[in-house]
Image (cartoon, rainbow, N blue to C red; front, side):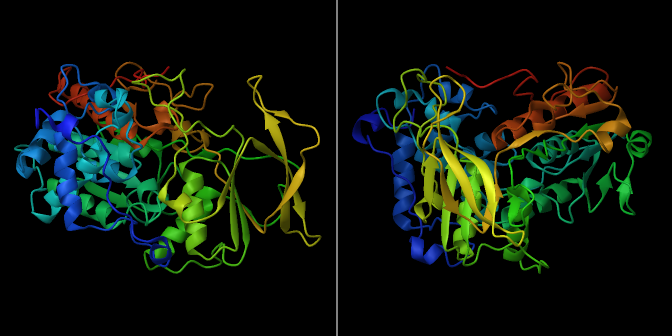
Length: 492
């Protein structure tokens, strides 16, 4: 235990300082600034960890992160020990420390009657300092097995699976249809949440370990830079599908055909490319426009922060569900992950958030462009949204962004070519060992689980890698498998 009286002496959460809003919205850099006093706060916060007899934070995290152990090492100033324990369960704490919503913190035992330990912030500080001090080095396998694996998709699940399998001695090639590796980490997450240099650092580590990257290759496509499913099956001993759940949920209401209505995942990648120094022809911009974002989740917040930096005249984010409570509701007890009102860095920067409203029509300007949304308030008391009579109104909008999530994997392309089965929810079906209906083909991440969190994607990639390793070694693997395909989060 770090400090036996730490949780008694320090009862408040201390978080790093964000750069002033007027300053940070002028650029695309990450919103946090590093200060000397933040380092002292990290020590105080790590000292609050009680090293519980039953550390529920382990179960709150799908990766099973050894949180009390690296909290103790942080408190004692042992960075080498801290990064060893952190990397023992998590390939990419530099990603999760920035992007994960931290279910570990909502299951922290201290959180029963005090603010929880700032686990996510401590995790990020460990990995950032480890990179600065040269403690993150390639782990090259002692010997090669002669077996080959193709990983399709370079998001967090695909990268985790590839790194684990490479370290096990297999020859791994990662295929990505975009021109750069990273999947949604590269083009879906705005720069102000995670600068892409962190992806590049991990790519360099993985390449030094032996992982091969094949960007700009459309697996299952029919263009000049494409590879078919049969090609992969002939060339590799196993295939891992980590293609995500990329079918976007749409909003088929009157006026949907109007110009100016875009999917969030068409809008955000363009902004990311420009922030990375690329030129995007006919880029969709929020500059001097009234913007409405439909969807109250993280992707909607990403659109909000992006539109703010592009100089939007106004931004409104709509959510069909009622506004969550400020504190943990009674029907969502500890250690479950509660649905509470949360304020992201993007919400601090401006815009409005409206709850319990539904869009019933997009209204045009007579020239084929959207000019407003007609919305109505809804009542969710019966479990389904029911329009409230007399509450219809218009919200001005020359740009509408749909951020309503994803519904599954496309059945055309690689899924159809390999002949793998897809269930009624649009997920690739798999057995207890992550294997699909086709022998030698495995699935990890959102493609098999459905839309989920980055920490679940990494856990899936690690567990799937263990299954593939066992398949190629005749039934046994020494790789860790933190979850099973049927593992779910603790819920109320």
